[in-house]
Image (cartoon, rainbow, N blue to C red; front, side, top):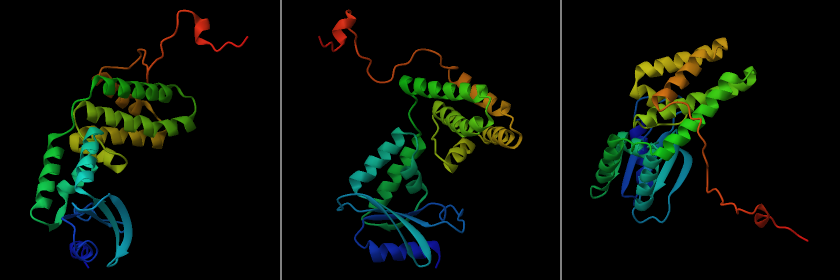
Length: 249
């Protein structure tokens, strides 16, 4: 049974009272592999809580992402704030399997609008934090004499460099395979340069290209961060140090 027919049968049999259903994921993008499953987003306005469920049906592994109306918009907002629009992207590209009173179309329009608008500019705090993290990773990566340490540090440096580049330019980010896809969507040239730097590092144990790539991104975003930074609330200290101590006579 093909993906759409199977997905519609699952919705009709297991979620007959839902208000909206979308088939999403790799089978919609015609990027399915032998291990791909049917990703189905279900939305029910009368449900009390969201959940996820995995099972097998009609010869397909199935992942259900179930939302109430309130949880749907809560997760959409959360994804936008963290700059990884997982749910918005899925619904935006998804195929409508069920639409009760136009609700699915309304949801799809909201997701499409949010996805097209892109993320907000980085706040000063966010920029400082990301520059600080990338600077520390860069310093550790270029200064470590240990190949084992560089092999561990490399992925973190690469990911944080991509994340800063995309966030600084008001582009969506991603994790895992979606990180590279987001970079490629933004700039195929940068993505190719990044891939060359990664391959050179792992194949030849030459970290120069990857280090240069990360440093260029740092410089574009304001440069290496070497100023003082405080995380959390720094306590005020008394002028008399003795007053801050618990002294037992």
